[in-house]
Image 1 (spheres, rainbow, N blue to C red):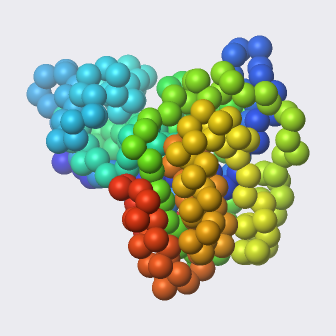
Image 2 (image 1 turned 180 degrees about the horizontal axis):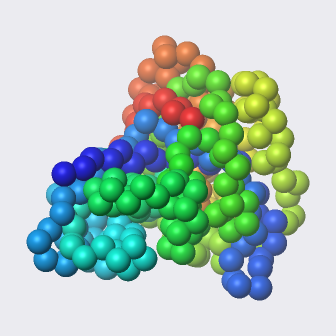
Length: 281
């Protein structure tokens, strides 16, 4: 038996530069992990089956699950002869812009590596994981990073300054494909390199002033609830607020614990799904 933690991520920036010939968007984004995580366990089987278990009703337990696909890819690539049972204790909201599925897949790459004593480095695992999804390479490493290309080229960054984060997710799910499909890339000035410098300098105020997500404009037009949550987050005392990924989750950043408690309580009044967490970085 082997255990892995799969932390959620938030985007501090998300720049969309242009649409590529392969259909993906060229992006530049700074992401960081937070202490909201799924917990996964891995156990060898005597047969060659991949079994996904979860008590969360919306977690698929078949080939649609990215953890299943990651296990399948590991078995094929490294000629693993026995199957695996993967249990996913789900805490990250689904379809929320927090990379919950990607985090589980990344944990599966690491978990299979450890369970079978393969001795593969994180760089190789991250490169392999890019075959399944753009956010997974970042999730393999965790921490804080600048991601470019379609998201699979990772430059690891130092930890950002200590801060508290309050997440608020409205009771809707957002299709990443739909949001990217409605996007007009390249019209906004990129912010990711400025955010990288702010993190390197541990400059909290510059981090706040550089928060940016090109997808936010598209999502708030389609989902007024997201715009309302952003307004509530700012009015309730967050130092800075942004939508993560393609949404619909909105986060607010504050420096002090008592601020985070106040913000959490304020957001609980307007949204059912609210979390008070910290940057892991």
